[in-house]
Image 1: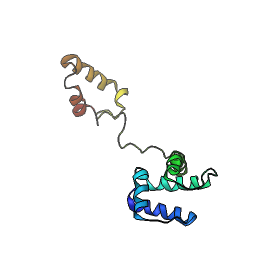
Image 2: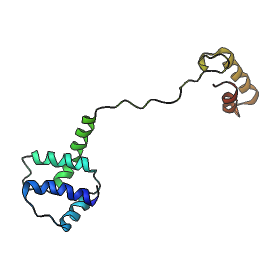
Image 3: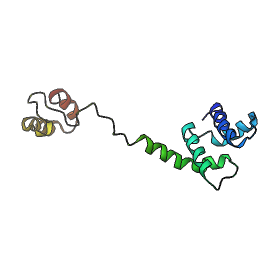
Image 4: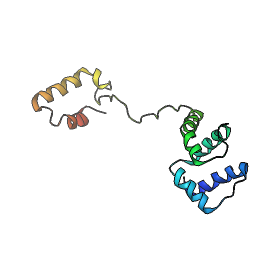
Length: 132
């Protein structure tokens, strides 16, 4: 959160408790809350305002409610499914158009190459000769 966002947050605080705002107050709050994203700070402010133990709101109250605020914001956005991969986890062989682990001729080809050459160059060979 930058200084302007901190000032906006303080305006919300001042709208309820009529506190006087100044550049020094904004900088003091910024030094404590600067690490926090504005949306989390706003949600934490709303949660702190609902807490009957908080009489005069201080930055520490927002910090103490930040974890709960982040959790609620995360839950409100819902659990999004992971992005789709743009690649096939198991490629098909060029020659037979079958999944590579199911293609007996290609597996035999790879095995023969490995027996002759060891592990060296196996990946390059598979890329050029087997994978589509």
